[in-house]
Length: 86
Image 1: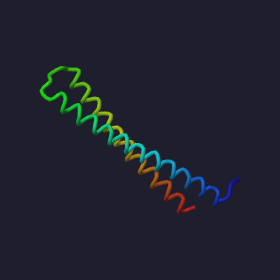
Image 2: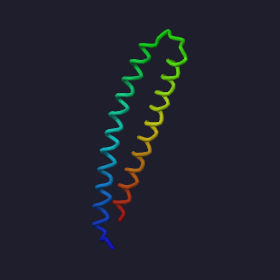
Image 3: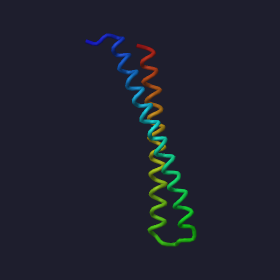
Image 4: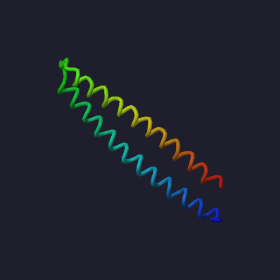
């Protein structure tokens, strides 16, 4: 059975990995925002359904990524609290 210190160490490493993933996700969101802005500018005045569909889907992807980022932050906080109490 692992010692308490081993468990704390593994939880800390898990937190670091999740924070790195969250940082990567932030970069993805920034690039997605740039993509959305460019597509908005490019398709202004367009009534083509494919252009509208692309915007809707990019917005949906952005929304889900924001949700994932929020969930990750909550998981990191919970793991950090767990590490503090063990």
